[in-house]
Image (tube, rainbow, N blue to C red):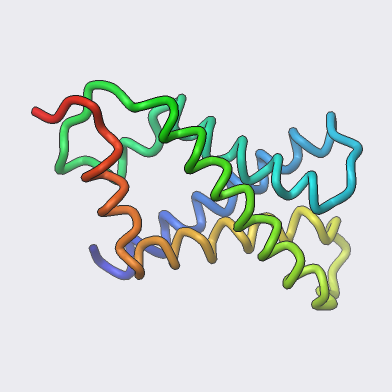
Length: 133
């Protein structure tokens, strides 16, 4: 995949993470680490439910996703959000925005670039579908 496409996709995923964090933080008043887990979980889970993850699998036709896999992957992404939030919240971002929203935007970008670079999206497509045509 072209580097330019990965960058555009990563920015989109960053905004999707930002939107998810805005919605979740309106309803969840837990510790920020628990909130980070919930944001990561729901970001991944809703993108699976809404079919956004199908974009990565454009070369493999998928009829159905396995719900158990989606839940396990969402738990994994929630854990990654907690780890990255713990690291990034220690940096001092100087801006007028709510720092947590900026951090979740950055986490979305970093995870997407990492998943592309490590080939996780490709393996996701090969293993995630029930029915391949």
